[in-house]
Length: 146
Length: 146
DNA sequence: TCTGACGTTTACGTAAACGTAAACCCGAGG
DNA sequence: CCTCGGGTTTACGTTTACGTAAACGTCAGA
Image (cartoon, rainbow over all chains, first blue to last red; front, side, top):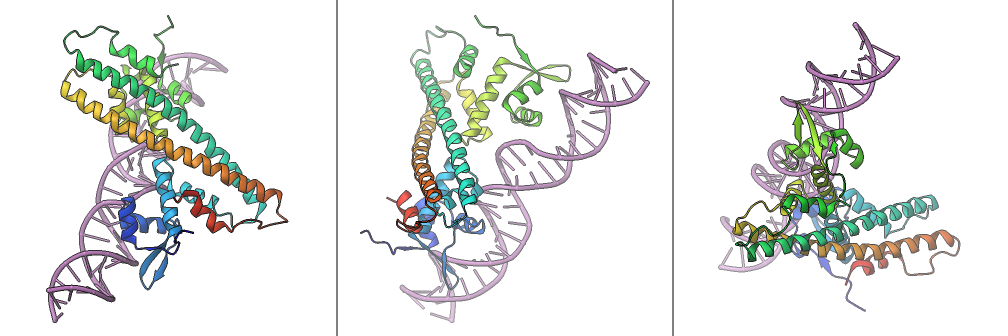
């Protein structure tokens, strides 16, 4: 199976994911990462790298660090407390709903981008025979209103 | 066609979209909304309502207010400056790429939520005959790595 | 007339997510 | 030996997106 013992320095990860070292240390402050230490120096494992990946993806989706921490903990059900597991399941369901809404939002927005782009191109092509269609104000309303 | 002359008070919109009046005024500070005034009082049209909707959807997708303002302006190509239109098209393309990444992120995350949920349910069902599978640390790595 | 619910402005406060600077340590290379 | 490029901590600064409080106007209803 694949090599697993890879060790990363803080710069390695910073470069790979295009964040600053400060950012990575900040995540540790927030209790999201727990690298080993060799003296003063932080050393990151593959596992840490994956967590960082999760955090950054969470960021792209608009999650707070606290939420990302929860998400990470989801994959680590060290707790055998049944009550906690149930609460966790709740959170998962909530997340799923939020994601579903995001999907809808994105689809809507993509459709509107399609339309916007077309209007742009149209405007670029025919800057001379302008104003064949309805005025702009109408369009905005139609775009989103239901 | 549909009734168009609807007028909303700040509270109306606040209630409808579950934000505070403060928030709505803040968007005006940021030049995202421009309601009419009747004396001191702000009055919002359907068009304003749609803009607010766009802003809030932008928020859900992690856009800053500045970005949302740009997005709104996209639908309002009052500028007949061709140069601006080209820049605008650039922005639209960038947006689209970002949204595509978000879609991937969301799909990944939904898959992981499926897995996480299953692990939860499994843990709930068989709290007795525990530890049939690989230990948790492996799972996290497999979930995202690759 | 008083109260209460709504509106307004001005302005300071706050939480999150880092940026940035100071001041330090440490190992390798010239 | 010195410097350079990395690492570290501590701590204050910054931006965004509002919250919150003060202090006020206005109109409807009891």
